[in-house]
Length: 112
Ligand code: AMP
Ligand code: ZN
Image (cartoon, rainbow, N blue to C red; front, top):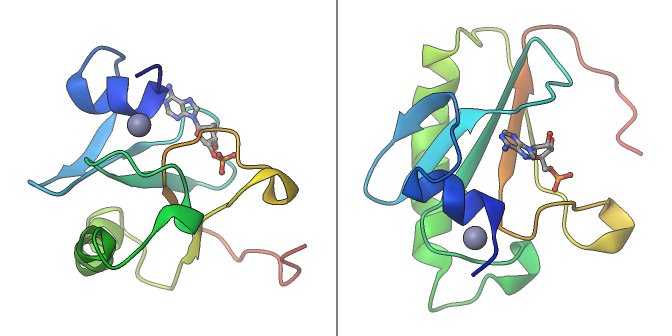
């Protein structure tokens, strides 16, 4: 499958790893929009949040169990934002489910 995030999981494309377990992989965004900008992805390929269903939702729960640890390790002691762009109107550019963890400064109130 021609998916850059699957290639990152497989090590075919290099990345700056922030966290990994049997279920998910986290790495620093190549084009950070905040001082800390980490992407968390399931190892299983799911195209977007719109592809979450009863059969695969356990990996999403496990990602959200990992996020507090990822945030703590990244020094995000004063809060952070979790974003998942889903589909064209949200400008999702990589069609592998991912959660942006952003922080390290006061983020804008406006979410679009
Ligand atoms: P989205 O626009 O929500 O689909 O987010 C995709 C994110 O992936 C963007 O913030 C990109 O900067 C990031 N990105 C794309 N390619 C890479 C890569 N090879 N390594 C790290 N981050 C990447
Ligand atoms: Zn993928």
